[in-house]
Image (tube, rainbow, N blue to C red; front, side):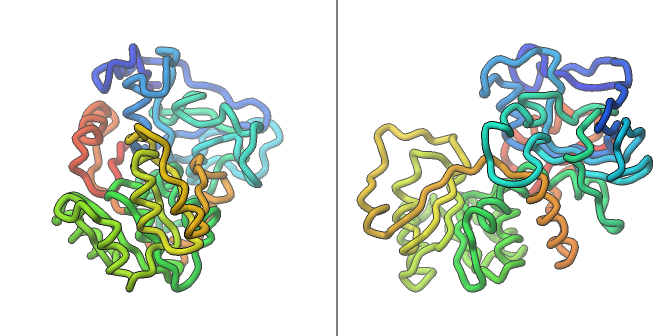
Length: 335
């Protein structure tokens, strides 16, 4: 079989396609023939050394879907031929996050999904609805589940709440879809008017250009009648927290996802106290969250937004597209 490895972690050019023996599933494991992968910016950071040194033989990418090729001893939840998507963290099946989940993130701590065949725990698999493609299902495990956790599980967003999405990356685009599925108002920011127009066509209620509106928290407050956002997906990083605090509603929940903009000084805590805000970090989510998100999207007839499809043989090009950050929605690698 063919698979990719991260090589010397000097960027997309470091990716190398190699031949390897097809693995055999052990007890409780499943062999999956991967059919599609979806990229996240995390994958770019892995091949660029952003998460520290990794073994050059590490198979990258966290998001993948395919069909079951073989099952190990004791597996009864899936059978050969079943179409499945793999959870981002194969150790976080259900329940709260904890140290027992460490070391299970695909394409980071353990081999990922950019391979023709891979072995994964049966407990980490979710079956794909009949009317979903492999490409669509592969989009959910990292960005989709992160948005689901931030808005629904941790954020506890309810009907009538306002959800603020920052930027038009994969998490934020999923955030728009999730907010609308649960009856919330979706407010999204971007530095490009054309991207704002596209996400508004997907259902976003309000779009704010943070480049032409430097005081964008004020614009968010104005758009929400002075109330602000009940749930804020902080995808920029700690350096942006003061602005997120300003845009949040009283008793709002700030869900910290991104780390691109680090803080040069600690954020002001007075707004947190004055508004009774909650700040919480988000570590993607569990297999249960993946199943719940997929079930609701299937029920609501929602599908992920796919911007580009790149053949497996040209996988480095998918990384280059991700680095350029001109896409809106997911970049998928097809096998």
